[in-house]
Length: 126
View (cartoon, rainbow, N blue to C red):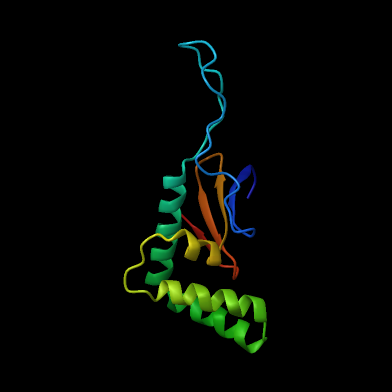
């Protein structure tokens, strides 16, 4: 994906960019910064949409997860189990702790395409 900007990386357990304002109005009425920014609520909605899509299409994940189990990929297995538990919940409401356990990154390209990548390797394009 060209021209993609990584806005959230939770490998460390915390967002890299969330709810950040770039620049400010130095002179009243004049814009001081042309950078785009994404607020935290938008990122949360992207994660919620991705989890919902995965829960609706869980049969597509079973083959991938079976391969991970057969090849005894322990780290991927751990992340797959966590994601499966999250997806299998009857009604999941956003929880930053659970998100940090399964989310790798959210990529947003300049044309607005959003890709949510989970730690076990699954990517969801929104």
